[in-house]
Length: 307
View (cartoon, rainbow, N blue to C red):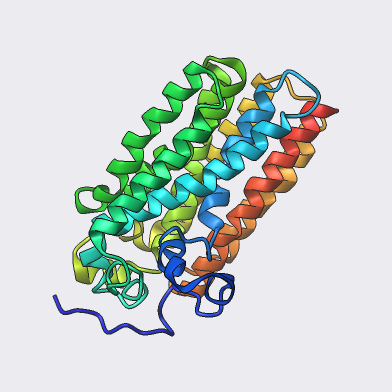
């Protein structure tokens, strides 16, 4: 397999991002490794945490300190996930125009330094995690298994998106554990709903890279489902709707939750109806809009809990 020629037009590195304009040059490759110029992944990690914190709350509003800690932790641990993913995928990334300019395949960061940086981010994440109770610390620490396993899955299965869902929605369990010191049926429903949500949006995202995936020999749900992706997304998003809605119902939210959640769910309908799996820009835009869906569901939970 031949090496890709770096192409700034195809690259997912944003040349005019705030990182390039506002940060010291030695820090830029590491901030790009964390994808701080493209924070959608951190939002997708954070919102299930906020959902769970809200449902677990015993007061009128979710704990603002916990919301802030989970927000900071999500950006740090999403960054750690991106670093380990880039370390594992460095040979594949160097053969794909979209990823050839990333810091490791382009030579801006050595594998050794990337490993040290991953460990540093994990230590920062641990400093946040120890602010919670012992049960939550155990739940949070166990998520590292899923984080480390996920990057290898595209070599063995057409469903790496499932393993991403297992990892990125861990906050649906951790938020509840941080407030209640236990787990139960409600966070289980919320977690499963998040996994189906991820199956939908990340399969859509995978259609950007399907030709390159075939060329370099990795698997994805986008390749497995092909032209049937929109029909499967209806199933994935319907399951997410039912499970997340059931979590709100089991948590005893007021009737105000349901219309707000219904409005949020219309956003998923829009994604499926307007999706063009053969248009990478279309796929990226609809994938990125899931940040808005996550925040809309959070608002629905807050409304249902507070009123």
